[in-house]
Image 1 (cartoon, helix red, strand yellow):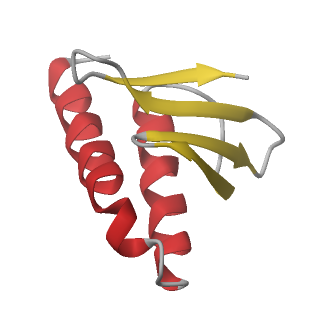
Image 2 (tube, one colour; image 1 turned 120 degrees about the horizontal axis):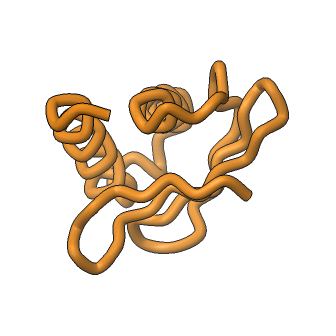
Length: 87
C-alpha cells in the first residue's frame, strides 16, 4: 500500500476514533462509523465490501463485521498507527 493511502487511512480512523465518544449518543453515528471503518479496511487491502456492524471494544478499538462475513479488529497501536487485524 502506498504512503498516501496509509496516510488517508490514518486520518479517517483517527477522526472516527477520536470522535467516537461524541458520536456514541447519536444513532446516525453508527452509519458514519461503519462507513469510515469500511474505508479503512479497504485502504488496508482487506476484503470486506461493507461494514454492517461495528462494536466498540475500547478507546480507539473496534470490532467490525463485514457484509461478506469477514470480521476485523480496527485499532490504534501505542505508536498511533492504525492496525486492521483479521479475526
